[in-house]
Image (tube, rainbow, N blue to C red; front, side, top):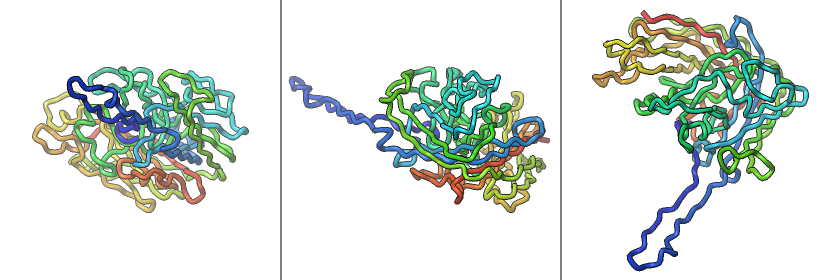
Length: 381
């Protein structure tokens, strides 16, 4: 999903009749866009090598990637209900952190995709988004269905999962500058933290076989999915359980000017990697830099597979009172650094740059494998 742009019914302009004339010829023409006929759904799976699951151990799970896009490349739905059907040899594990009914089955429904561990964001005016529900959008799953808002039809901006799903709550992956377009002050004021990276890893062992994603489009909010509900489906295969190597935790060395150098070792088998820097807000102060950091900010650096270092620029923060960009990390602020590596073009398929209806979301093998690092943190000098 890119920002909050969704497909909506198109309503023609209404011509107003003159006095004494008949209004019959001026009834509005309403043309509803079919979510099945006009959209294309893609689905890919792979092996997830998860170091971000806590405890200092590596967990191997299932990675999922989907796109649901209109012809213009924007997200193809305002509200939908996704269901993943796994190979019959797989069984969804129970987890006390989740209230769901998928445990013991070979299906991952909206119940499990509705992650309970994510914090409720606000709509920019302090009103929390009530009971967010998961859908399949332009690039990845997220709890962004329109019935999540306090006002019916309010479309929330992108909300990243705390990954991996089912496992111990982990890290949120938002695409931010310099790899992605800068977040405008207007979007930041609406709690838009960054763009989707597209992947959703799930801490459960994956099996070879066929995986199917069904996306249903109920006619109205709150209605059940039944045989009459329009549905798009996509099927993919997991052909290998060979994972990417583990991603060692990145190291960060501050340069004292707001940025710094990131030391990384991209895992073998990966074709690209992204490093994420999460900057936590500092205590309120009169300092112009920290005043510009009123919300948590995310920055992302694109890294080639043969690189051992990456640079976080100094001045990527929101504008200060004088109009100049604040430092990326202000003195005294806390930060976290973590990374994800892919064997498929995850960055190239992402918004806002990619507006293809069917971007490439898998490697030549047809799979989409990911390896995530653990997190390193500190306080900026």
